[in-house]
Figure 1: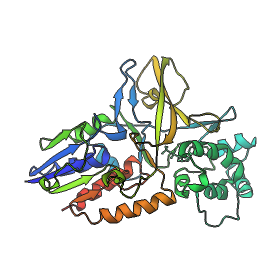
Figure 2: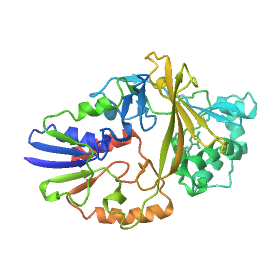
Figure 3: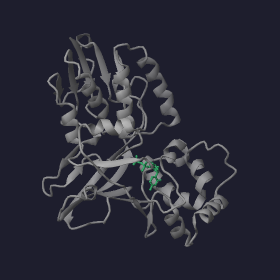
Figure 4: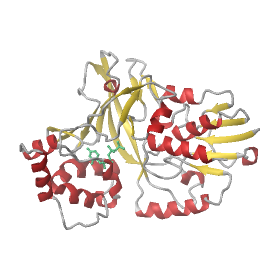
Length: 367
Ligand code: UDP
């Protein structure tokens, strides 16, 4: 009999628990400090409207990894869903990610793909050879006009700092296209689970040798001797009681409204103007277009720096953060009985499919 403790019931913890549960000799305890499983992927039906609400913000599953896609479908039915995001800048609605429609509309042109490529090359900043940050990455590839309109204001609101302080990798998440494809993601598989994300976690964790304890925090009072191994998916700075300092994260919060009909006609609309205090508005019934709802719920999303009890969302990974993180990592590597995994424990910007893929790999290699 082997005993395992898993801290956190988001995708990292749930995948490890599910994989370990296949061996009936394993006894698995999953703890989570919140009052529900699923971490930030948690969904539940809104009491008044019955609309499936993504409590911690929109989650659209997308991956190129066949293995991850097949795996997740053991626990749900994925309904194909294409996220077509719009953005509003100076009272005009544009298409995202930046594509031929965006370029033609913004510059009031009718360019074809080749013309648009040449045009963007002519306005891009070729003095930047290897982009050192978010801003340089943008200026090198799309030039100042598109950058200032669609990225500068939004990014400042989202991250609370100058885009030149941020790594270029954040911008590389978004494609730039010279055709009319307005699918927000490039990945081959894209969908939304028919019955929400929480149902996936319930199924993953439904095994006789898995015990779940909610409202339970991991701290120094836990006696690790009782367990053969611990999988930790919480924030790494919290694990070490912030002894080398706090890592910076952005958190988001929402202002929810319930009303009749259709508020914005789309799942997600971004607000690029810096004067608008929120970054985007999501209207959740548009994530389940196969359901019929007379009413609607929509959320204005705001971003801010985390304070003591806020939920950490986005790791900022500024220079000073990475110096602090290196110290935690060195110390973490001395702890044989622990595996640190997931977005918070490894302080990385990860999507659901990255988290699942990595947890599957760790479970596979675990002896
Ligand atoms: N971004 C932006 N304008 C937009 C959308 C995104 O400037 O309209 C920038 C912003 O810095 C954001 C990054 O691109 O953090 C990555 O965007 P993505 O939509 O992938 O972020 P997520 O969905 O993870 O919040």
